[in-house]
Length: 242
Image 1 (cartoon, rainbow, N blue to C red):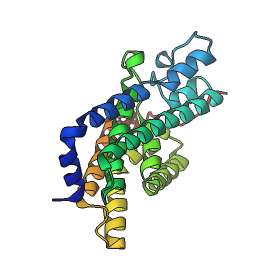
Image 2 (image 1 turned 180 degrees about the horizontal axis):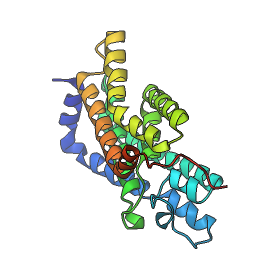
Image 3 (image 1 turned 45 degrees about the vertical axis):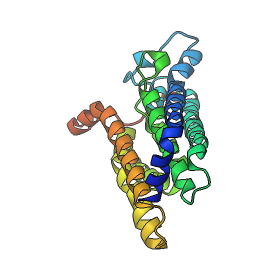
């Protein structure tokens, strides 16, 4: 049996609550939506970002509709909340990992679980009537926390497309679509084949790639309106409100 699967299956009966607690904590943290909160504070409670611009409770809409400073605050807080959720998930999964040889990989499974539920909380926030953002910044924070190589590949893809088109959504969608393939490249083609020491385990490669694909598909679906506008040539280029 694959060692990662072995650890997970042998401990699930005792530590099932760790999986549940990780998901719940991450979702609740993700439900704190900085775009909504920062806009409320910046406008002294007069405006809701979900009633402005594109109606999306995220960084890009704050940048266009409210201004650069609140947008910067929003993106930093969005990233930090996901980092916090992912680190908590990893910490909780140390109980499952124990001192096994594949402990780092098992801990990373907890980080992916936390990341997925943090993004769900961001997009469907409990505190804001389940109407949130698209999860791009939260997903990027998960990438950076989980595997910096994947983050750099996604960042390079985003920057190239954005610098050419000046359209944030184009780079975001491309990054979402490529998250799974880039994760596979990092974990299997690079780690497993280049190092040649059978690490990480095949199960971890499958789990991490599947998690990245799930997140990528979710973020892409959340951009369905943007995709329609891109196809029609109607997607606006970025222009920040001063």
